[in-house]
Length: 396
Image (tube, rainbow, N blue to C red; front, side):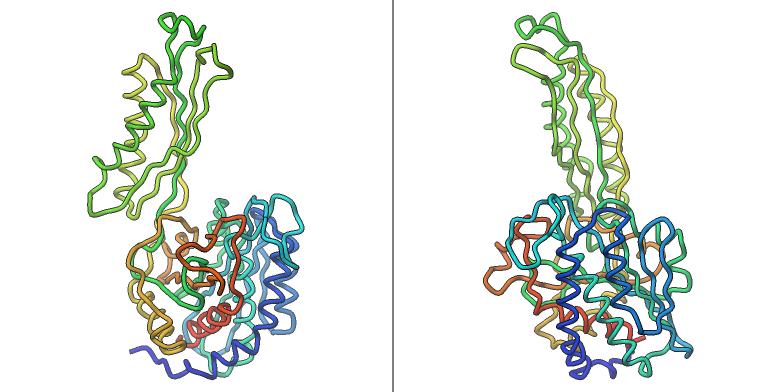
């Protein structure tokens, strides 16, 4: 039975005492978003927030990651707490005092909030070091948005000696302050595919003298979407979306090629393999049936994010003890978005939970979602995230 004795009002009050610092750091990072694996300004701000805490800090070699260890000197597990750092290539259109100062870059997925909550949790836990055993490892990770940042950090040893791991992701489409998670698959795999249909171009007035790749491409789109329902078990989830299609240059030319690309999402590795194989098979067969040929490639992305059932249950128990049962709900189903915390969970037991940050003047059902140019974070909900990060370390 997990000891929840360290969890209670005092911890939540301690998190509230760090709220000003949490908001200040979050807004500073929000105003200066950086993309990808190299985030020097964000790294600098993280290091400044950790100054004087007595943490053993290691900087990344291949990325601008920060790993900070709190070692109690007492026997016990090593608990990893992760926060991702990078922004999105998006123009921010919500006006505020801390609006992005860089055109085409925006913290629209809440990673600024993740960093700020984790830094405040580090400060809180250092203040309460006497209540801890073992080690707490704070993982500040670049490159979550498609750059496989967690993978680089794992290769550099971030999981060495780690016994369990925990991460929080904010969502504007969940009631402010509410925590939700589930055991098993919580987020999908995400693979990308590219297909080029090859025909023979010519004048649009004489299609009989050409091999038109456009009808073949159009038929491929329809066939790919049909293929999902005949290759994935109906009780499982999977999708194929063609999101970009391009062919031709003007109205009176049949082009020699047609290009398309899209995404494959599944919640288990069996379905993932089946759809990856199916994309190529359907593309080739459809092209041939139209007298064309095709080339295709499936580019592997993030694997399925799979929470350890025991760790997901622990997160729920801790949340209820910390915030009250009305601030936790079990997720009824997984999300089809993807996360590179999945790499961490392939190696150590752990869980990811979602924290609601819906603005008070919006409805969670209609609020501007993550990845929107109008996404806003309700900063009052971040206190719950700081407290939960700390609590997951304190329960050892």
